[in-house]
Image (tube, rainbow, N blue to C red; front, side, top):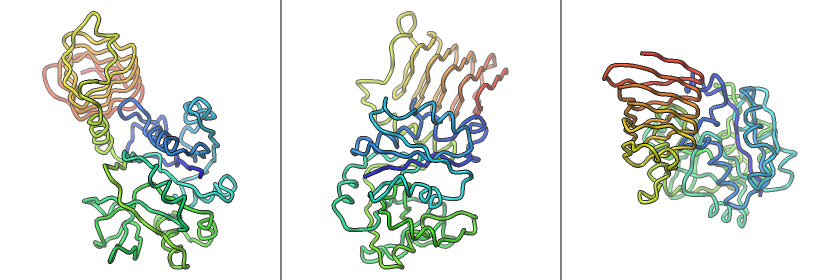
Length: 340
């Protein structure tokens, strides 16, 4: 079985964080979100992986993942000239897939229960597709599956009226039969070639599309709030007695740590700092006087601030200096320089 990771899209809901790079490289718990997809595929035994890149700094994706050898996999890059939908992106991989079954994983989704059992199920089945479902409170924001008597009846993209609460998550198990279906699709009202329409068409043409419910949690990280929530969910998986804290900065200082947190390498943090809960701090970060909670501080940041920072995402190279004792919320792009 082969794998495809979708790494395109403009990430408009995450601006300004995505002005200087693809959203899938934004770090959650000190790891790019698409790396979770890559590791899930590898852990399921899939080592031939295509990464679909778009026109938002594709060289950053190539520089980070390379040819995949250091990850123990082989990576093929496929270019999508503009975001025309998931089905269109899949169609570009026809030659890469050949006659193999494959799994498509959206690079901005994080799925923590693992893929192996689903890979094993699909490998041994004769089904043309397998979709995974998760119950959500806002189904109008997703592709939704209508289930009746434990049978998949219909798949609808972002329904305006309530169909069900079961969203089709961004992991799709497919066979090459999908390519012929995609060739016949027409753009939707969003001017995209919809994967939900392709799956529905599979069923309409007599192919079997099976489904399963995900265990554990799944997160679509399309907004800053989603990213912070995903950060919480991942940090909650850490063993509280084996905190993900590198102690190189603790030799000469003792900041107050309220777990769960993760702190990267070569950080300079003094005694006046309080970190946590639910804080991810990248590499080469300097912290003075501040109190941080429920936030992501990426690499090479400097914060010297006598205020509380909460519910914030602060991108690489940001500097924040001086303030009075208040609480602020930040959403800052790379190389921001903020003085208060």
